[in-house]
Length: 284
Length: 176
Ligand code: SF4
Ligand code: SF4
Image (cartoon, rainbow over all chains, first blue to last red; front, side, top):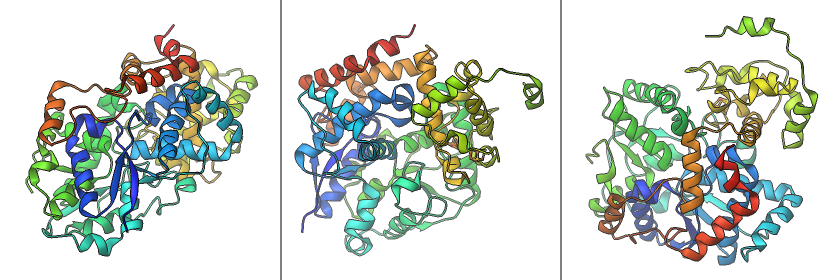
């Protein structure tokens, strides 16, 4: 059986950490899952900024992205919590409010598109790995089991708001810990594990000195608990953790996206993981 | 720093019409808040700043438009949803904050850095530019030089921008 999904790239993975894009493509190929490019898609658009500026624009652009996937008849797979949150919330809002579907379609008609609704799902790649592919199939691909203490960072928009996401327990989730431990590392407990990295909601763009204080709080907790790596499922959290360590002295904790971790564990070429764009060197 | 006590002592005129407009824009749960403060206690941003979630919700209930819209506090929320998960009254706090931000932007309150992000998103399809370094890196990784998105697809980009002409986003971020 080959599963197929429409790959939604977003902004930060393809433009700042292209290794995440590459690793994702390679890892899913290794798992016999087909990822189809969603040509012409744009920014999700970013929930913390664009949705905060103008909800109507946010919804119309998100609906355009969703309509492109509908045309392909494929569920969307996202590699970023922000994209997941944005597209999932938009699809949910449009599911709840048919008047909004009409309004959005009035706009989309001008660009030759229509959003039907409820035809395709918006999925997070970690959820796809956990639910559709399953831990056993993942384990069967591991040729290079990794052995380190991982500080898993869920990020905010993976399981929250849980009322609509219904993926995992928002306060004590386990999906990512299980996915990380499936390929070797030990997922450690650390204080405020579920806390935000600080980047979201436009804070990094508007007041990065405050965002970085939150990041530093998390880094200190990870360090104290003996975390050797941070494993994330969102390029924006990834960027925030990686780049904050440039400006805040005293930390040297490499940051890896789950797709990159899987790439290494599956024995894919190390140079395909794109670690060259990381600020903190990844010595794995 | 302004002390909470000072503000409590100031008498401010409530503006029910503004509160109503928040509710109309999607903040149906606004009046369910009974001021328990769980949101403030849960807020990672409140640990670092003077932003107090409970207080913002109270101001919203009272419709204190002039207090809310120009304030920096409104932009301290990272949209982490922790408060929403824990609120005993299931107030859609994060959604309400985003509604208030929409109102603030309409009134012309928008940070220059945010305008930059918005215009990059509008003009290129992405919130950040694709620079030559990253183009090279993409090629080295065996990826297409430009990702298969709006970037490098003139027709898609034209559609993309057209949507924002229709919604008026181009004018909105131009500022007043
Ligand atoms: S947690 Fe909910 S009810 Fe309590 S103060 Fe905050 S918004 Fe109001
Ligand atoms: S969603 Fe915003 S207000 Fe609520 S806890 Fe997170 S940062 Fe604070």
